[in-house]
Image 1 (tube, rainbow, N blue to C red):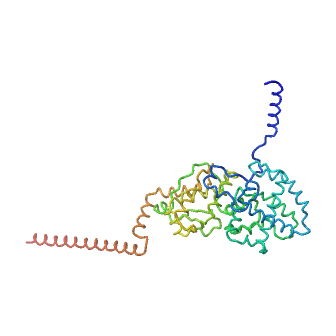
Image 2 (image 1 turned 45 degrees about the vertical axis):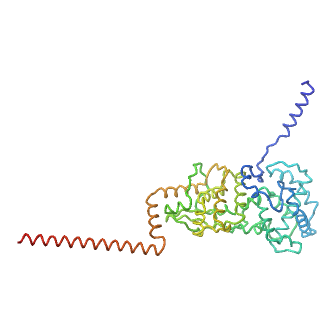
Image 3 (image 1 turned 30 degrees about the horizontal axis):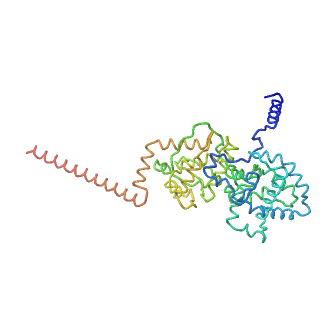
Length: 432
């Protein structure tokens, strides 16, 4: 290699090194789901009808919704009226464009112009959709979106980890739009996703990265008010027995109705495992998988929801375990098939990397394990199951015990009578 070629190579290397950037920054919160997790159920992470953000932009199967997004974009601008300054709005997006890119885990070939247009359309589509849902302000141009299957799929698509746009840019642009309302964009967001807000949280002091993060907050926020801490332990996780095995060991199950937190599992002093009500629906797997993927990528040291799923995975191994939880009113099976529910939970925790474990769940598993190792508990449970599980069985068992006691008394009396007769005869013979 001559000196000229060497200089060219060195120039290329210097240029390459100067352009090197960290693949992820502290601002990153929207991730491509890791391959080894995604391949277990690709559909759970892929939008069905609408693309939001960068990862699925331009996907062929999602183009039908693009004209509806443009229509909603135009309707929102019209709604704002003279208060809306399109030029100022676009300039604000242009200023935010570098920060928006840094929120995504992967690089994209989109030009600044293309990205600005994407953010404009996606954000205003969401604004108009949430507005109409909040105020019930629907019109004849919503005929297609009124279809229940489409409404459900749009809402689910907006909760997928790969289908997000930073909440900070949404909030900022909504505030800058000039739309007069006493309600914040967070208010509208809570209303739109209200079905998943089982703990009835209010949008006060809630900070979120995006809609997937909000779904996780719905589960985790109530933990702050519970008596146990949200600490972590590096101890190896204890293998918890299944629901069927726990019942055989003498553990009782009951629904935890005292707490508004879906993750509030407790093992009481009365040896009752209390679990909040869980509805298993068609979209449960999708929501659970995306929250777990978010924790794998963004909250590896605070994977509290993953802990919850791990415990459920231990409890539910077979259809018999599902039947136990359904019978106790803990689980509502809207999938219909108990095997489907068992397969769902058995597959959720595959390929998940768990670096630590929630201290509360660790102690819960530890207490249950200690209880199951006591043979006295299992013996008492076996006796109760075999002889007292139903009123008729209990009555028959009591009658059997009474009959045994009476037979024993009769036998003792007969023996005493014989002994007494023998003594009398012996005394009589001595006198003679």
